[in-house]
Image (cartoon, rainbow, N blue to C red; front, side, top):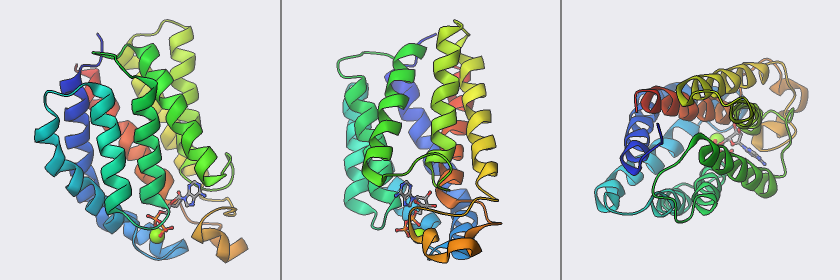
Length: 211
Ligand SMILES: Nc1ncnc2c1ncn2[C@@H]1O[C@H](COP(=O)(O)OP(=O)(O)O)[C@@H](O)[C@H]1O
Ligand SMILES: [Mg+2]
């Protein structure tokens, strides 16, 4: 079954709730290797997104995603906000004009979003950033499309790949972002942005599997 505009809105509401619930956890992760604001940043951004959603109930999916991206960029400072903003703007551009999304459309959106983040932040897998969760997740969806897998199964695999990528950041030494200032001392801690990215794809898998 395709992903409808209402399902996209439901995902965003769900993720805003997940971020609110995990705000302290994300901030704790950022306290270890950054400046202890990732949870607060994401929560500020997604609370602002929540206020925009009622006005988006009759807009197309691309407009919804782009509005989320612009809202994040205008309300969240630091690195994380603009990077997530880029994610949503690029995802929106990739699905312009689509009334609903097939798994292949979602794969294209995710690929374009991840490319946008990599271009903006200059991070590659292994640099201990959100890219470590997002790249494997996008690859998992692409593989599922190639296998003609059902959408629910594809989304679960992508969330699992994001979770594995998130956990794999623990031993890494950060090469991008604030955590890179710590050098070797960044090893042994899970990356906050990879964690919020896993939570985002996990919310998509939960909400859209019942679509
Ligand atoms: N250049 C980058 N490319 C990709 N992701 C990055 C980059 N710099 C930082 N990040 C991600 O952003 C997260 C930190 O976000 P946040 O705390 O909100 O911003 P800031 O680092 O400005 O305080 C990191 O955990 C990492 O995943
Ligand atoms: Mg921070």
